[in-house]
Length: 367
Image 1 (tube, one colour):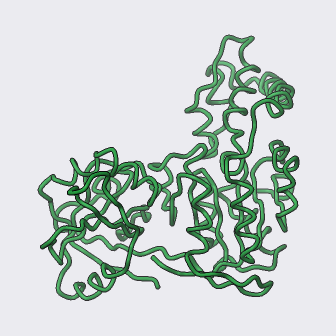
Image 2 (cartoon, rainbow, N blue to C red):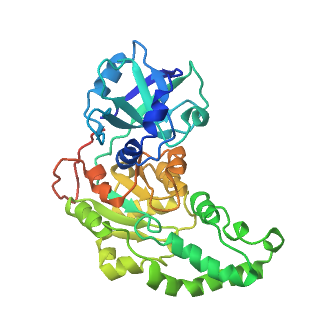
Image 3 (cartoon, rainbow, N blue to C red):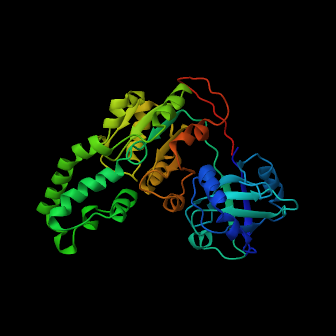
């Protein structure tokens, strides 16, 4: 069930900063919410008109956080989007400590980013928290690079080998900026005086592609649990698709493992005019599959993936396995973040057993 609750920002006592930096807390927040937590929490106070809604939400089981040692404070989390009018929603989580006498009108909000700064709020401002239940799912669409295969480091290495004769280097920041925000990759690598040399840029592209087959064969692999994850979703009746901004250069591990055959549709850069974050590829894939966006999720590792999901109307799952980190993906407003593919069936299918069907699949909508 979708729920929302609003609260007024209030400066806290500062105790959450110490709690959120404990190693076991950071580990479990990453496991449950997919976040590398920013120290502290945003404190909200719920008014009388919202207290019943907050009470109903907080009575739900949530995602448990168990301490390492007896006597330490257990807690539970609720994934949400933090919303302020005129600002993009931010991925966040409500933290409820399991302590006696915890104030019934207080909400502590975790995030991978400084929420006050990103939402531009101060004491007295209102923040809306919306839960992010997974829809009744019929299809799951996947990005490939950085999501199903560990090819991003390989792309960087291929480009590095192409620029080495010129004494240049390819930074991780250049790769991240290109993949997350669509910035021109070679403009981020070559010196300013060479950026207008179209012949040079064309040569660098050719040389990069020439290095790619050896790197692909030597070091590009499926992420662990990819096969088991896809098989679980398929067995539950979820239809699978691929939507990638590449031309399929890194499909080899999927082909060699036989996993490419599990996908009903594959859309690459060859099929579209506009790259992500434009939703063209996602909408084309859904159209070919005959599935509505509201019944689908898109799983990717970049800001561009999350933005394309929102533009197409899909449930956006941000993976921490590739070019985007939890801060970038949170600021983009992913519905959920995951640190590892092994957790994806748990998220998308919930705890309810599903009956395979071509027409409909029901899942637990949980929080």
